[in-house]
Length: 301
Image 1 (cartoon, rainbow, N blue to C red):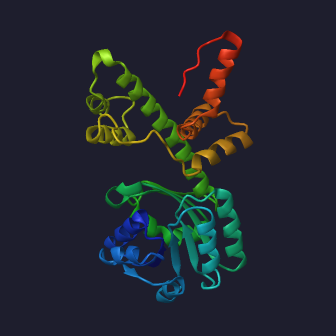
Image 2 (image 1 turned 180 degrees about the horizontal axis):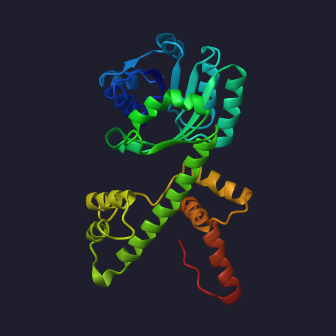
Image 3 (image 1 turned 180 degrees about the vertical axis):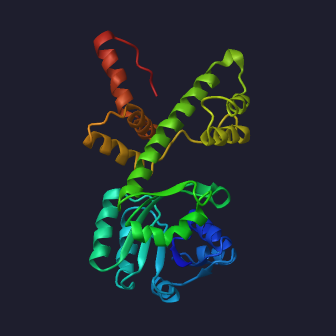
């Protein structure tokens, strides 16, 4: 199958390379000329513009978007709309909000175009290990695209599937990422407790290696944690500042809308927000309150 790949960042480029290796023809586009050159070196053809990309593809066209969620996705979707013809399909493989995917799919359906949302997990390891893909879209449309998903997945019948109508793919990936927040927070807190028990002088990387085999907490995330501890046992040079890309916030908001208690995921999101407050007004005010009601000492800056 031949398709276009829009967005040739590290993940998009790796996906394009895996597709080419699997026998598909891929033409990629990215506004960054260096990104285009990088994929060309990996055997992926490139186009210098969206119109050139669309022209290079046979009909019916398939265009896979691997761009950041929000305005960039909207701009790309809107730019493609007048360039495509009835029967063409766009796959959004980024981390879009599922509500945006439903809206975009309706716009495309009104113009005779297909739209599929594909929540994609795998990160930098996807090229080698394959990608986990949660696909939302019309059943017939997804069936036509099946060879693409089979090539990108860890196995033809592993790690991917159509989970429902348009929007369900990104909704499922959103919850996946919310769970990821909680898992990461639990590992980080546990290893921090181990690290603070200085009288035992525990080797955290050794502990991680022990847990990787036979333990009920073993996971790929623990494998990566062990690797990180091997490279940098004390986390030297890393600022205690954790970013979030939005999915955790969306998951918490959805839990509230559905009246579903999600304290672990919510707490892990709040901890990420707290990590960015180097001058916490909250903590300063708490200290001031303790001084006011109990005369407790205030630690000066």
